Length: 113
Image (cartoon, rainbow, N blue to C red):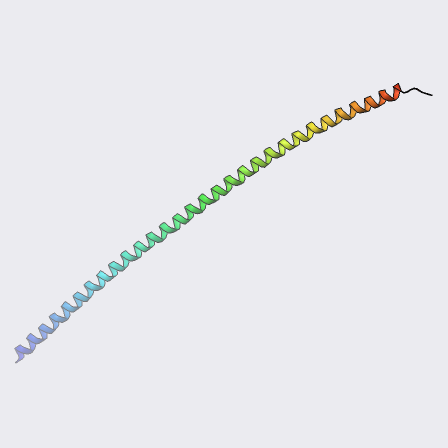
């Protein structure tokens, strides 16, 4: 009878040990799978973030380029307008002087009574 109790106790202990080992193995497997999922998610999140940063930098570069081109075009327009205004002032001065001189000469040609 004692032998049966010892055998039953040994069998029970062996079953418990196998159960603990199986549970530990499953826990390790679950932790490993969880770590893999976390790593993959971290990499995917970092990839998305980098993609967003790159897209933002590209958009900002495009905006800066448009701003630069707009300012360059505006400066060119201002230069052209200033040059044309100076030319028109010069023509106005010449024409005014010419007609003032003509008016004076016409006055001199009038008979004086």
